[in-house]
Image 1 (spheres, rainbow over the protein chains, first blue to last red):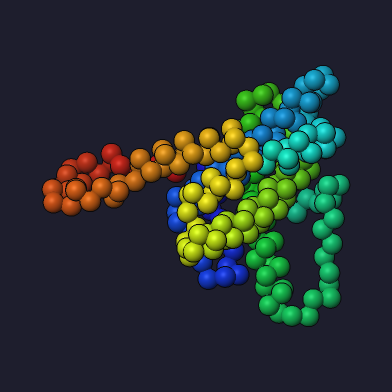
Image 2: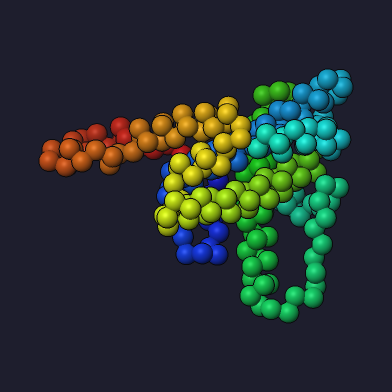
Length: 66
Length: 149
């Protein structure tokens, strides 16, 4: 699942297509990590639904890791 | 289908100023909102497939939150990549720049590095030696080097 990303055009610059693929992989990993970590917390609490509170708890470490 | 306009603003303060007088700024806002929506669509599909793997449900507001986070991250990432490329006196952002942006997390950097090797290996035109006999071969094997999205 490749997300098509428009590079910022503040300075005249283009991106090499492999770099775009690589960065969309990076973003996909970000979303995946967020979901997985939140799911872990949700399951640890015995629920089956990921709520905002679960996301809150994993947010600091997630932002540090990325 | 209107999950995209669902507002969840627990995590974010997105305040819309109605005071923007410049048309250019408005266009930028629209472009940004459009990109953000496309981000949400991608995030929804990624999150849903991940949720199925763990047999958990995700609430809509959480997905939108994650998507907006990823969007902000992508903005910062784009800035960083621009700086790295400029620092290396290049005008084109490379795969090396992307890998460098993940330098703080070794696992992440290694994952990206191996992914980049796979991407390089898939390139159909990386070898110049093929030019002489390549044309006939390429027509005979068109699907071998096809990059699957």
